[in-house]
Image 1 (cartoon, rainbow, N blue to C red):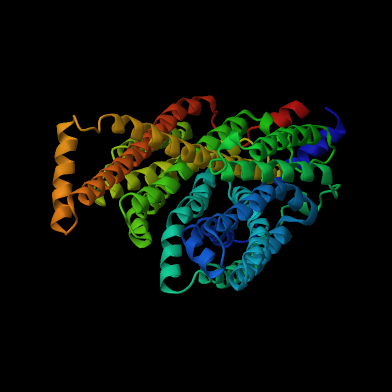
Image 2 (image 1 turned 120 degrees about the horizontal axis):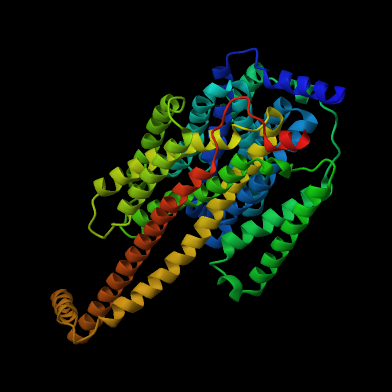
Length: 535
């Protein structure tokens, strides 16, 4: 082997042995404080949309851009974070991201109209997009390989728990104070995270002494067009009747073309904004596929269960939050348990167990009906969160465990982006399934709702008698009875559609278990596919 190769190996070995000079748990606390704030803010605004729309004299449809604008800019920054860290340094980028996110949060709270709020949310999403992959790569580099499981357990608390408590906290703040405070509360948290980052975060040697990189403006432009149009299609597709709409079809075509151009550009560019060679590693490639599916599962349950409780069962935002909050407790408990077990058992086994628990608990949620009590939601939700926590830690450890430290920042951006895209695709698909499923069930149930059905006839007669008792004449009371039966029919059809969605998610989790067999053990010191190819 050449002298150059020997020096490169020595240089890599020095980087692999690098550890921060401070206690790594202080590093973990610093980055997790910022990450928790960002992930929390991605869901905390959901329940406040009606209040925001009313306050700023906007329609409900216009208010959804508060969410879409954030997700678009956040998604664009996720894969770009590794490239930016190589160019300006990870610590500097982390501090700029925290500062930008916190400053944009203040602008959100001060917004006087909807356009101002949307611009502020774009800036907020850009600041928050870099924080998740930066936190993940910093944690993996700061801890030795044998403690990666515990590090990812700490990271998972923020990623998994924050979206669960976000709607509850947002509902309480909005009801008790004003929607503006869901943004203002980021100021003290952001300032504390900025202070701790300046004290405890260090750049590794390969970032301090790496060569400057060229600006891949073309690659960034293709990525921005691809992710921006994709998010618009997923958010507005159901509302616009998908490909029945000309502009949705055009955006889909533009997104597909931009994606293909982006891939070609990144493969041919000398300094690409996203280094796709990380996907040569079998574990990372498989883990990224699984995390995309996990995004569908995680966001599917967390988005549709509160919606069912509020729109069908009539729960308030606070009661809905209390019903789903045990999910966060299950996730936290799972993080503690899996952090203790991950060095004693095969991570692939833990991943399979987590998916199995997630699957069974989601099947339990598919048994929902109009007569269920809160406890019938709490326990399946707790075990669903427990299963999700059991998936997150071993999956991340396996996916990243065979990569070099220099690859982790870029890989973390890809990994988080795919999970977020999976969540967006899952929510869009399940929303379409919910609408169409309700129509199918309504048609089926309506076929049995006729005058020849003794149950239907008896219900109509009883309701008509009640309305007549209230003072209505026979004709009017019969019409009101028909309307009440039809509303009940619609409600039951919607419940069946929700049950179908939860059942589908259960089967998807079950079908994901065999993918764990495609992963290899993440052994400390193992070479990545990129290193093998280089030799």
